[in-house]
Structures are given as structure tokens and as C-alpha cells.
Length: 173
Image (cartoon, rainbow, N blue to C red; front, side, top):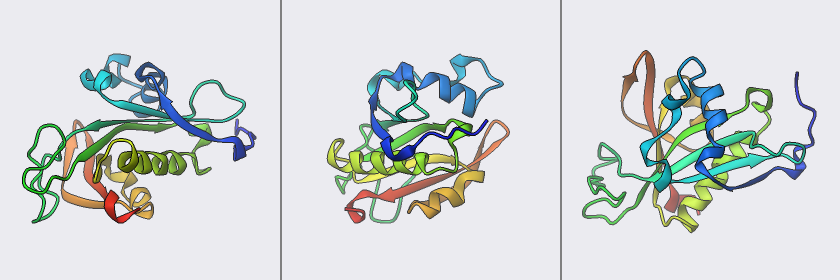
């Protein structure tokens, strides 16, 4: 059933971590127990949801954390600081995880609007310079169309192939 909701009233806002769990589970890892989508660091992160007027629950969710990149982003950035601050360049890395949109609402720009909201919040509210993620290889082109670029080698989490993606917040403002 395709929703016919008017998306002109779409709003993105900060939410509690527990509000992300139903979509994380049903979209990202439906065949795993709910505990698989819970992160130990959830209490230290920022969580955002996209809401439409007719739905009290978010139709898309994303979680962000101050977390250094596990590999250097480029020759000028050494991201080994544990608090998301890189050593030597004072760039603050923010990682997004568990980005999920209800399949009934995919392809309607909701995920894009939520990601753009998080990109903006990374710079203005979280004082981040770099936003990055581990993206499923199958979503790489989607992220590239939204300004993110791949870095590092592909890798696997279980049977799923991933690539790291990033966007320089300083160049988007």
C-alpha cells in the first residue's frame, strides 16, 4: 500500500533513541533480534526522525555520534582522536549510523531531507567538520548523488559489503 500523504508538512527533528528502534529493526535487520539494532553508544548520540502530518511515529530515522574515522580521510587529516577530533587538524568527525526509511515512503525524498537536516545539524549544532558512515555498497550511488564520496576500501559486516562515505561539512555551508 503506497501512502498518499502530503509531504509538504514533512518535518525533521531530534528524537529519543528508543524512537529509532522499530524502523532500524524492520528496515535494516528484520531477520535479526531487535537487540541487533541497539547500540551501546545510543545514549551518547543524537537521533533524528522525519515525520509526516498523518503519522505520529517517524517514517525515517538516523543516529549520529561524535566518532573519529577509523582510517585517515586524506593526507591532511589524521583522525585518531577518540572524541571525534582529529589529531593535528582539529577537525571533528561525526558518524551517522542506522539510517532507515520506511519502505512505503522510500523514493519520495524523505531520506534525502533527513540526511540534509543531519548535514546541517552536524555543522551548526554538533560543530562537526566531517560527516561519515559505513554505507552498504548497494546504497553508494544514492549517497554520491547527495554529495558524499567514498573513501577507503570496501569491507564486510557479516555477508553485507560496505564502503565508507563522507562529506566535508565545511564545503557545504
